[in-house]
Amino acid sequence: MRRFIIWAGFTGFVLAGAAQLDAQEPWRPEWKARRAQAELPVPGPQPETTYVVPGPESYEGGSPESVSQRMSALQAELNMLRQQMRGQMAAPPGAMPMPGEIIYEGEMPYGAGEGPYDGHVAGAQCCMVTPGGCCGDTCGPLSFGADGIFLHPSVVGNQAFVISTPTTSIGSADQGVAFDWDTEASYRVWVALKDCDRNGIRGSFWRFENSISEFATLEPNQTAFAQVTVPGNFLEIAAFPGMSIDASHRLDLAVVDLEIVKDILWPKAMLTLSAGLRYARNEQNYEVDVIDLDGNTISSLQHLHRFEGVGPSIGFELRKCIGCCGFSVYLRSKGSAVFGQMDTSVEEVEFGVLTNTYNGEGFDEPLLIGEVGFGIQYSWHKLWLRAGYEAQYWMNAGSASSTGGDLGLVGFAASAGLGF
Image (cartoon, rainbow, N blue to C red; front, side, top):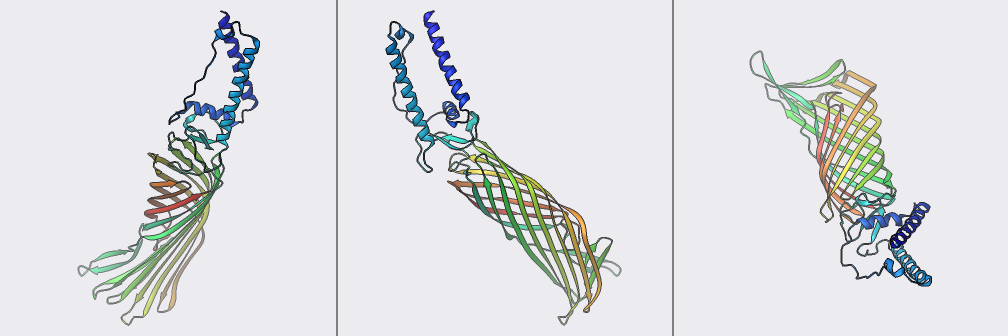
C-alpha cells in the first residue's frame, strides 16, 4: 500500500508539472514535435542505451540526500536531451539529417498533433510534400514557373466559305470548307508568394495566337460564297466559275489571373485550392477575298470581333506522389465566368466600293471558360518539371463567320518551376 501511494504521488507530481509547462508555453513546437516523433517509426540502427530506473523498493531506507541526487541526475539528463532536440531543429538549411531527426517545413504530417509547421522524419517515409520530397513543393516566400502549351483550336461552325456544284438543271450540292487549324505553341508564366502556413497569392499570364487560311479555285461549273451572320442580318460576297476565293482567320486569346491560394497537405499528396479574378480577351479577325481570272481582287468581306472582361474564377490542383523517387501525378481544373463587352464590325466591299457595313459596340456578353489538365511531374529539391494533357473550352467565344459559337483548345503542356 505504501509503494502504491508513493508511485501515485510521484506520477501525479510529474503529470502536473508537464501540464503546467505545456500550458505556459503552448506555442513552442518542441512539445508537438516530441509527440509527433513518438508516433512515427524511427528507422535505422539505434544506439544501445541502458536506462536504470530505480524501483519503489530503492526508496525504502534511502536517505533524502541519495533520492535528491538521483532526481538531480535525471533532471540533468532530461535537460541534455532537450538541448539535443533543440539543436536538431535549429540545424542550418541543407545540413544532412540524422535518422530520426525532425525536419520542420510547414504542417504536422500523418495527422500527428497540431501546429503551424510541416515536418517529416528523416530516413522514414520519404514521400512528403516538402522540398526534396516526392511532391517537391517549397515552403518559401517565392516560387515561379513557365509553361509551354501546344494547343489545337476547334471552333464550332467555323467555315471559311461554301462551294456550290450543280447536280441537275435545278439543283446543286453545297460543300462547306472549314478552316483546318494547326497546333500552335503558346506560353504561360506565373509567380506565387506563400507563407509556411501554405497561404498565399498567385498571378499568371497566358497568351495564344494562331492563324489559318483556305484557298480554292473554282471549276467552270462551280460558284462559291462567304457570309458573316450578325444579329438580325447577314453580309455575303460571291465568287463565280473560274475565279478564286481566299479566306483567312486569326485568333488571339489572352488571360490574366490574380488568385488567393491555399495548400492542404497529406503524407503523400497535396491539394491546392484557388479563387480570384480573371481578365480575358478574345479577338478574332476573318477576311475573305474574291480574285478574278486576271488576279485582281473584285470583292472582299472583313469581320472583326473583340471581347474583353473581368470575372471570378475558382480552381484546384491535386498532386499524388508515386513511390519515393521524386515522381508524382497531377490533376488540375479551373472555371471562370468573365463579364464584359463585345465589339463587332463587318465591312463588305465590291469593286473597291464599300457597299455594306455593320457595327455593334458595347454588347454585354458573358464568356464562360473551363480548363482541365493532368499529367506527371518530377521534383528534385526545389526544381520541378511536368508534362501532360491540357484542354480549354470557351463558351460563347464566337467564330469567324458568326458572333456566336464555342471555341475549344486541346493539346499538351510542358512546364518547369523553381522555388526559393
